[in-house]
Image (tube, rainbow, N blue to C red; front, side, top):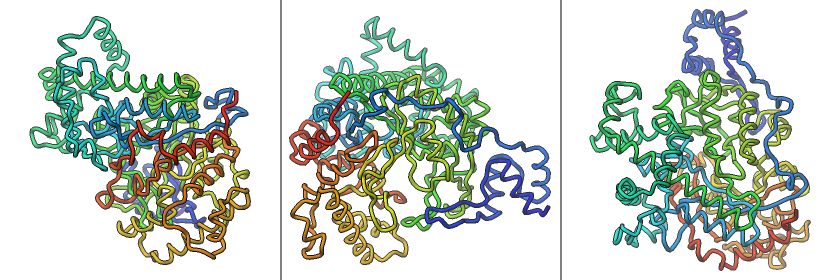
Length: 628
């Protein structure tokens, strides 16, 4: 056996693929250097052929990695959904504009949005991940780059709904440029909310009733050491920002990088109030999120909130500080090159360690799931293929040179199904991108709903008809990482990608020509299904120019099209029912586009009065009446 064969054998034992099939169906061979680097990041010596030979003698094959759902393992599906269908609305919580919030959407807005959606006939309201970010660095605003998946983002706390808020007086009058702007000014909003919450915490300490104090103490006891360490991290983070050391532990002095160090214990003792404050913030956030779910169900939703679990955590946040063995510090996760990202994607997230997960008996993963599911009726698993494998990028390598690393799929699936059944929560897996052969079959066997996006569902050059969608799925027109419907129609997404340099060698004029062709294909499908608006017949046959603005009747027809699929669940995006053109996030960009900052164009209080909202939701009620 050659030295290269030995390397590939070692890689296979450790769960690495030395080749993979891309989205285009081409076989991609991974460089040996990248394989060696990823093995090294995992703590497996492989830098030389001698290292490989030594490691082969001690590394055992990964357990539970086979792609087949274990018998009897299945996620929760309510009885009424076995043979029924429903629909819901999706939104980004931070984007919710209201007459009362502090320049960023909050849990009170979420409750009102749930009630508004329920009144329109929706059975659920889906949102972005609500994970804890960095309180001391509010401009780190991506909900998919969390400090911790086990806790919530305190910026979503509705300050005016906290006990004692009336004592804030003039502090409740937020400057109009912060409250009313089209983009969220996180650097301004964060400190304002932090100051107000600090004042209310001191009131709580002085005035809390016995019942309130007992409820807080019970929450702290229930969440235990995990909450303590997260609160301690947040307190340290604030202190380090004041010292000019930065909000994240990678920049802190060595004595503060270990939560068990004498310096950290001393800090905790001297700043006990600050640690308690951050625990209190989690109690408030948990209570307000629970209230939003209660309002959703009371308003008639059968599912309620549909929450999101990010695929990983920031390498320099709370989760990795509290338990560094849980992640692999020498690698990041991302995605291989595809049509729009020729260089691939580097998400910067720290990959969970397969051996670390198994060594912890999957407890951190279970806790992250339970945090999300405790106040939800449905869960979206971001990049669901991460249950089976993730694309790792070793330090000093680019996203084009990544390696797929496998996880103990069966054990992870058992954990997910256990929590789903315990919390009686539906699970939807985002199976977009490079999907391994057999993965969707395993999802179906485990009652994990698939994720189908209209603009991705094609057969050769044609959009597939609604009747060809699977039943065990959630269908939608678009998602947060894509264009809005109105943006797609006018090609705004192509302009944004071109300006950001993401299109690489693609010609913009050719892409616009292709977009016109796609519009006609989609209009043709509407015609086949008897849904084509009369005003679009000439456009479909090139007898007339397509209007620049998306006609409302086309938006309604496309929602009807997706609603007619057999999929159990269908979503309507808040951005689409409000006519937004600009998209929420442009993957592969940072400063080039205001990602995760854009607000909806109308307030939550006014959304139900929009003609487009009324027309689309009426169409959804007609196509998917609430039966059973």
